[in-house]
Image 1 (cartoon, helix red, strand yellow):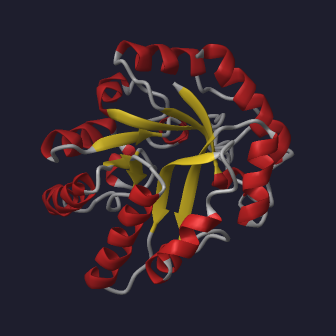
Image 2 (cartoon, rainbow, N blue to C red; image 1 turned 90 degrees about the vertical axis):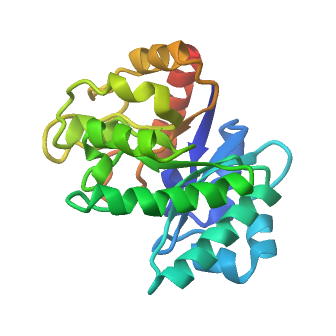
Length: 254
């Protein structure tokens, strides 16, 4: 396993500065958040100028992109596919192998989402990519049984495991062990069960890092563990300090 850092951990810094800070913290791999409403790279920008996007996410041989986590905001299916295809081409150009996109909101039809994801997974596979969907509150994957159903019904689809959403969401810390065979990417921060405790200082939450890594090892997982804090103004701690602490903790466990 490899410990990486998500650009969302330093979302309030300019992209170039956040990448340089990750290099200073001695990360070698970066999980690039490409979000239309974010402050860094946007899917629309990738679609409009792929070459420039590729330049922006590489600062040198010591830090390389290894995964994309994408949030779209498009007016129609045609624009969605234009941006999705551009992201896939960017991934191929930068040797990224894992692409994470969100699934439909909770309450949406599972059958319709399966059909949508089958098409996107096929497109991703033609570019040599693994398509994953994140375990996330407010979406179909907020319950493990539905997340597993999606993976069972969509050939090649994997999960980006974000256990915070199973600790702080409606699942409230119940078991999600059934999902580990489907995990192709992992994003981590510490989290408590109480309202307002989605992100807490490392060591003050409920995330069992050692157990998660043990379960992944049993499934022969050999991919990324991304430090993925949410860099928000109301965070009660310094991002750089917490990122460093979680990096050292994860490295001590792998």
